[in-house]
Length: 436
Image (tube, rainbow, N blue to C red; front, side, top):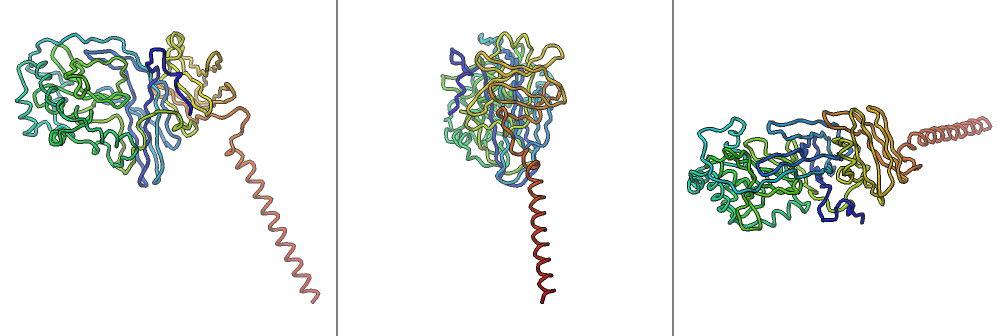
């Protein structure tokens, strides 16, 4: 088995974090996969710098686009035309660094008379947050005080007494979840209260619904390991992170964020996930984890989306800003760096390396350690898209190229021999008739 142990530093902290998403179509459909792209993150608790080193997009993608929502999440939209059994997948390599962290205790916070416009939406009911429901309202009223900080702690104490639904986590990660809508696979706040059992995202929605009903603006955050927590908006502090499900005695408020890479912040009054697909179609959530590279075939991914790294920053920490390219049994590392307007693609491993200045809109190739990496780079907003991405061994021909080159002459010769044989038989028959 190929290992990615090179991406772990001496302290055991992973320098590169993979986000792996793999879905299988259960019916014939045309759809758009929407996936959030990790971005820089700032709250009262922490400031986190993230860099998207590479997003490998499966080769059956028909087109790719980037959009930004009202909260600032960047979304990648990939279009597909699928038959039953077809897979679509993405693998994202992201590097992040917690620049600062503030876990000082929070003091008394009075409920304000009004909220900023951009915060008010996080008081509204949503698809998984029935804020106006009578039961939710009664629970909120029971735990609300004139102190926003204490109100948050009271509600976190209440929801933390629920059981953890391990079976649902196993189903989500096992590859056996079939659904037309990923949100439908989870319980809303009322269902969580009825079952008294939940996973982190459900627990966060439940806490958020009660907090909103109590007048505390609340939203959810999901990281690259699919861990979900909440943020509450407190007057004078801004957004403060809090844990709704934790193994330590609750509440964790403020919640530490060291070595976390946020994948998506909830982008509306509705509950949301870092990925979804439209229109609704039957899909199997085949993989949401990336334990080893045996699952990954690099030549099944013909498009790569990358955020170029400043050359000076890369040279200071090259291992932090490079991503693996797996070509079994070899693993080499790649980086796309920028110096002014100049872009460079580099491959390296151990003490060897190979680099090439990129020419936009044309085919580029880099040869390194017996393999050739080729692609056509184009600009897309602040990202670089590598189209027609391919990896093959040096001097090894792609058999698909030989099909038209060899196949057409073979067919012509076969047709010629066939007609020659028929012509010979015809002449023999005519001669025999003449002789008779």
